[in-house]
Image (cartoon, rainbow, N blue to C red):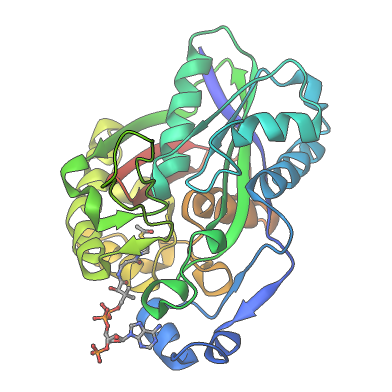
Length: 324
Ligand code: ACO
């Protein structure tokens, strides 16, 4: 049973916050942020939650395929910033777009969320039971950021992107390689809930904000992500030269440079939009993929080989190789 991506879409909330805007209330500078991260601006949601961004991306995906939402068998949303614990963000997207027959659920693998969700959805479809499904990555990172903490606040942005998967005679997914290491979970945490009940007086406190060991994450990505790129190439029996584009999670431009050097794939093949979007966590890979398709850099149906790779909190990391 084959599965292919037949449409893509993304939505960035209209409000743009530049590095200079941040200097108004934070001790930072455009120079520091650009030099350390490559980020010059990010989009921030005003009066929109994660499901609103995801629903807008979903509408754009369906419009580009001229398809009605009622045809969808499932909606899977990767997010670490859901609107609520319940209902899932995916169920709210279903309501907003009228996907009446879809089954809907969320997945959280932090910044690797879209890669993990795409793999899950691909396997769900390979069961043969479902014809069409949406895989979305959507985040409102702005609501879990401590805007007084310059070491994290400058890095993130909001947005949503996704793909439509459909069954096809040929399988377009070549290989995948997914990993987690919960022993290193403290490197990146967000919205940690306190255990609150009337039977315990000394309950541990939660922490609503994102907290990150920046150096630790940098080391983790530099060590573990080259391995997953090598692994997925090997599993797909592909050479580096076969890869047209590496679409990696957009955390930091310096990290892309490190990855390029370590895996010996030229930096020109590492697509990037980090300057305009910042780190949009689970949304970064599908936003970038759709932007490349919209500008004609990648064409659906071209058969080109692309390598998607994600890494983030959990810790989680992994890659997917596919023909597009
Ligand atoms: N503006 C100005 N100065 C700052 C800022 C800021 N926004 N943030 C920190 N500084 C200061 C620090 O206080 C420190 O000052 P000091 O030397 O006087 O103590 C100095 O800059 C250096 O701070 P470091 O944290 O050592 O800076 P570093 O060079 O490590 O860069 C960064 C920080 C960009 C976070 C880097 O560690 C990194 O890229 N880490 C990867 C983590 C990442 O990208 N995470 C994204 C989320 S996780 C994910 O998506 C996988």
